[in-house]
Length: 129
Image 1 (tube, rainbow, N blue to C red):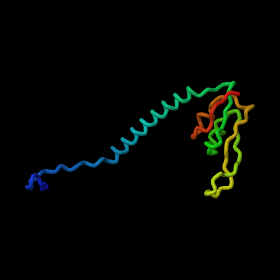
Image 2: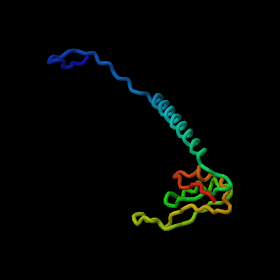
Image 3: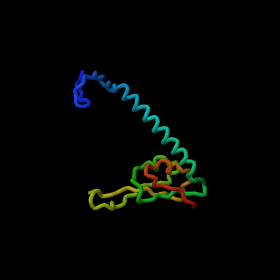
Image 4: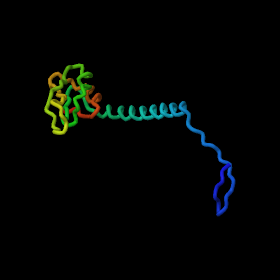
């Protein structure tokens, strides 16, 4: 029982304890939310994949300012059409000697779009040959 001031006088009220969320309930909520987010992202990626043009008449192109040199595109490229090269870092604040960037070799590129789908920063686009 707790005394609560109500209209200038104290009244006794029974307080029901609030039950805390258990660890199992919290883990279940996290799993459900992660599954919901994963499903939403996968459906968005599917739509994006369908919109990316590709084929023999196209070639991949890297937007250098968006490329972070992560190596994902070189891992998925079956044609060995992408290589990384070192370039000086543009920021005087960071003390790093080199910054890797991807470069597409036009002749071996078959326009398969795998690099576009693998790029985490959307630095690779498909252009007409």
